[in-house]
Image (cartoon, rainbow, N blue to C red; front, side, top):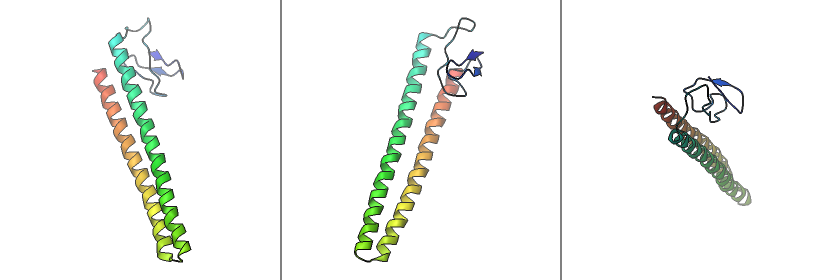
Length: 125
């Protein structure tokens, strides 16, 4: 068993990252040694998926900001021109835009998690 240095969770010897917190697990003297190439491959994969997750987070935040600004422009212009239809359109467009961003965010994160899991399973073989 490999013990996680970050959270202390016990993990099976074939795991490369902690099941509880995702921290990289290092082979110790009691278990078989991990080759430097395998360790480097693991670090690269985790770093790239971590960076991809951060980029998806940033894209979602920027999308929310853009939707709020655009919906706000519609709502304010509707109030200034006394057009109820423009105000309602701005509110509906803002709500639909937010739902679209949330749905796409969840889909992107699911795809990254699936790819991460498939790579982890292929390493175990």
